[in-house]
Image 1 (tube, helix red, strand yellow):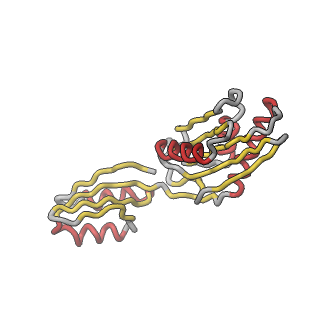
Image 2: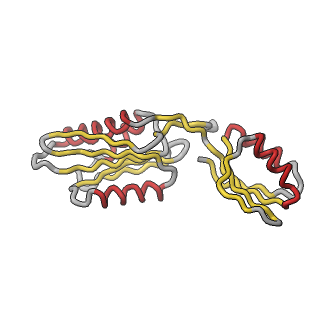
Length: 204
């Protein structure tokens, strides 16, 4: 599989709404990068709407979108989670979750009606979202003697590294990221330096 250097996701949380026969379908979309983050968002949304009859969702995580889950939350199988996931795929998005909350209005919608409702609510949320092209970042942990500080920082500055954690002592530890597109060149530069230990944490 070719290496992926960028993907589409959403910039910030967005909401959508669809109404049918008295039922309200409230959709909440958010960018997530790990399953733990998706589960936290599901729990948060469920607590916010603890009186709702159904809290359904789908998420798609990873650079290739192969990690995905759907949940119908008591709706007939395939009528909620799959339509939500279908819209996520139709928009070409990765690293995203959409939770759709249904408040039952007293009238049944039927299989086709439910599929349409969850699809339309999701589409509304995604249409309202700001969709962005996100560069894939490679995250590193770097250890080196303090005496190497100037040469190390010069290399990292050259590659516009984003620092997530810094600890400057006799043995310095940096956690940082750079766009995956530049990762191999960065690794070559750092690995040519003595007394430097470079660890790849993850790509996301």
